[in-house]
Image 1 (tube, rainbow, N blue to C red):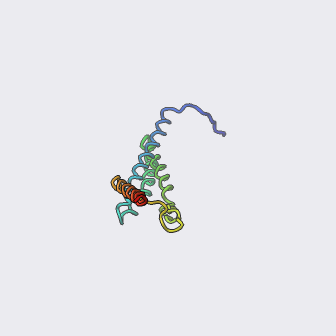
Image 2: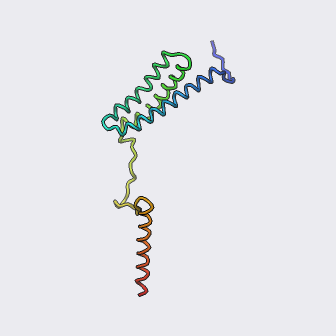
Image 3: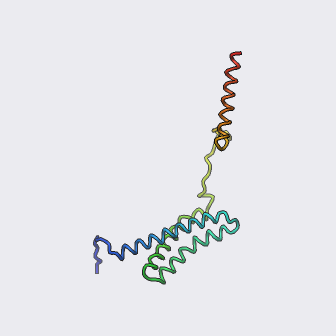
Length: 144
């Protein structure tokens, strides 16, 4: 038997389900992103926290979506979807970091093509003063 297809305005239940799923996915993204970011400073515990949260969040979401009903099930379905999306985004760089890390562009000549000033306004002011003194000395040397 053929299914009917129609475009109609969503009911309150459908809108609630979508909003609950989006909320679950958004909260999962914030928690996973913060945990993976903070895990970088944990030293030897970094792989445990990173892999744990990247694999654990989708697993908790799937179990919660399968064994609960109503809005909690909708939120858990969002947790499963958001966690799986973040895992899919992070997995290539974690498995093959040498391919997915940024590399500095190659420079010819080996040196830096740009003269770098020291950090802060005081260092910039001192560099400007040295440059001005050098110009005054060069100009004054020709008029003596």
